[in-house]
Amino acid sequence: MRRLRIALVAAVGSVVVGSFSTPASAGATAMRPPVVYSGVAALTNASAHPDTAPAGSNDWSCVPSAAHPQPVVLVHGTVENMTYNWFSLSPLLAGKGYCVFAFNYGQEPGVHAGLPGSAQSGGVGPVADSAKELARFVTRVRAATGSSKVDIVGHSQGGMMPRYFLKFLGGAKKVHTLVGLAPSNHGTTVDGLARLPGVPQLLTTGLGPSVQDQIVGSAFLAKLNAGGDTVPGVRYTVIQSAHDEVVTPYTSAFLTGPNVKNILLQEQCPADRSDHLGISFDAIALRDVLNALDPAHAVAPRCQVILPVNGG
Image (cartoon, rainbow, N blue to C red; front, side):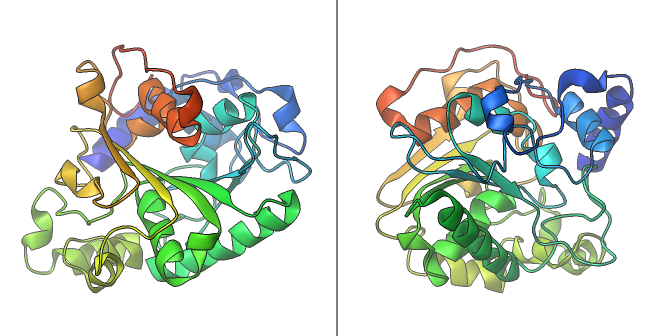
């Protein structure tokens, strides 16, 4: 089902004008790049500008403001990449005055089953190894900005994997807030298919080791969630859609523990039909991200029709 939806997006994306976005460069933050809430436009842009940082990100001279003292690190999902995944959120955050940073991680030679936007699929390597890549990137961001802590926003695996960094790699002292968009925190049943003999191994063969790590009951998830979902000192927000067809059941995304806020989009707006892919381009979900990063100035999202895959 997911591959069918990706194919449909690609077909539509072929007729979308690529000028929705321009590739990012140093100084892009000051340019206030436009924000377009569209997975189709994201796919078109990623196809035209592969392996480029999303607009508004990776200005290594950016100095965090007093209003937004933590730089924001964006962590893409499985078989995704920064160019596609953060097409909407990166310029949105930059326009609000945040220092924004994004990177590709978890790339494995020979795995090319992902979305356009990079020569290699991201987020396919073992999740614990990807967490080490995140740790190194956070160190680089902190050194460049002079900030003691960062905020992290991640999609899918990118919302779950940072918890390994927090719990086992010393990240708890370096992260202020973790926001997950449809994170695979307690794994997925793959719509029930994961319970069939041999299916997890089959998925790993095609999509890389990270998929097996994210199957319900995996050894990786048992270690990650043992002793509780959270660590002291970090604020957590989970934003999830009831229409998620990848992280199943959708409730497996939610966390339990202190300093946790779980948000179900359909409780805010029944007209929101975004799914696992579309949530990254969903104006309602991204308003929730802004609120999680700056709760003192939270604004209630405006309820509107949001489409699957494309967002809006």
